[in-house]
Length: 411
Ligand SMILES: *Cc1c(COP(=O)(O)O)cnc(C)c1O
Ligand SMILES: [Zn+2]
Image (cartoon, rainbow, N blue to C red; front, side):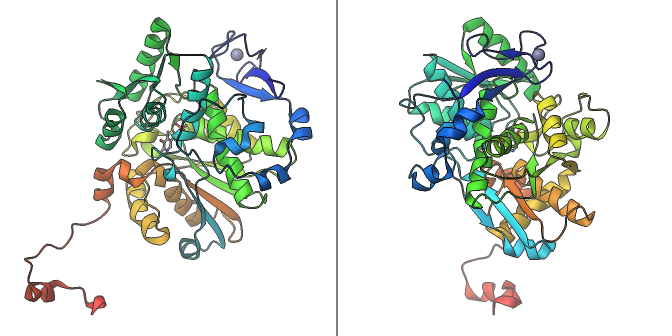
C-alpha cells in the first residue's frame, strides 16, 4: 500500500513496517499510529473527487484510509451522519455558530461503528475467523452488528453492569457475549489474554491502531459538511481517549494534504468520577488510575488505554479539558433533546454539559464555530434518560379527568 508508510509508536516514536507488527510497540508496548505518505496522497486525491463521489459513507475517504480491497466490508452504512446547525441551543448559550454532529445515527447507534467498520475490514483482510473486543457496551454492540451479515464470528467481553439495551444488541445480533463480573478494565485485560491464547483478531480500543483510523473519518465529514471551513472548537466525550485522538488524526490528515488551512482546538470532556485524562492533562501529563465511577457508562474507565495519544491531541491542538458532574450530564439529556431534537446517551451528551460549563466560565467567544460531538443514541440507556425527566400524567380515559390536569399553556 503506497499511501501507508507504516506504524509509529506514540510513546517511543519507534517506526515499524506494516508486516513487522500487529498491535502495540515491540519496544515499549505503547500504542501505534498508522502513518501515511501525504505527498503521494496529495497528488492523487482532490476535493473535486469528493464533490463527484456518490458514496455517502466513511468509504468515500478511502484515499486516506489504510485499506485497499473493500469487497468485503460491512453491508450497512457507516458514517456520513448529520451535522446540524443548532440555532435554538446556540442562542440560549450565546453562541452564533454552534453545530451538533449526531453520531448516534450510525447503524448500531454510536460513533463506535466507525472503528468497528475499519477493524472488521482488517479482520477480513487477515482471513480471521473470529473477532473479539472488550467493550463498555457500544464497541461490542457495533462489532456484533457489523459482523452479523458477514458471518464473521464475534466474541464480546463486557462488564456485567453494561446497560441492558447494549447487552440486548449484542445478543440480538448473535455475538457470543461474556459478561465479566468486574469493570471494563477487567474485561479489557481478559479479552487481550483470550485473544492471544486463541488467535482471535482483537479490536480493542487503545490497542488496535485501526480503531483510530476509523474514528478519524468523523473529522473528514465535519470539514466536508462545513465546506472545508475548519471549526474553532470541538467538544468530545473522552473515556479511553481513542475517539479524541482519532478526531485529531483526522484533522491533521486533512491539513497535511491541504484540504484545510488551519486546525481546531479539541476540548476533552470527561465525567468527574472518571477523569484520568483530564487530571493528567491539567497536571504533569502522567496518567494515574481513577475510580471510573460515572452514570455515563461509555466513558467509565479507570485507566485509559489511549491516554497518551489523547493528551498529545489536546496539547497539539491548543485545546483544554473540562470535567462535569453526573448531575450536569443527566440534565444535558433533556436539554439537548428539547433544544436540538437529538436524543443522546449520557456519554453522548457529556460534551454539551461541558460546553455549558465552558460558556459559564467564559472560555468561548460568541462567534466561534463550535461543534458538539454526540457519540451515542439516547435509546442506548433509557434508565439514565428517565432519571432526567419526570413521570407522565396518568388518568382514566375520561374528559373530565383530563380537564382537571391539562396544562394551562395548551388550552
Ligand atoms: C466509547 C465511547 C466514548 C468514548 O470514547 P473513547 O475512545 O473511549 O474515549 C464516548 N461516547 C460514546 C457513546 C462511546 O461509546
Ligand atoms: Zn514504543
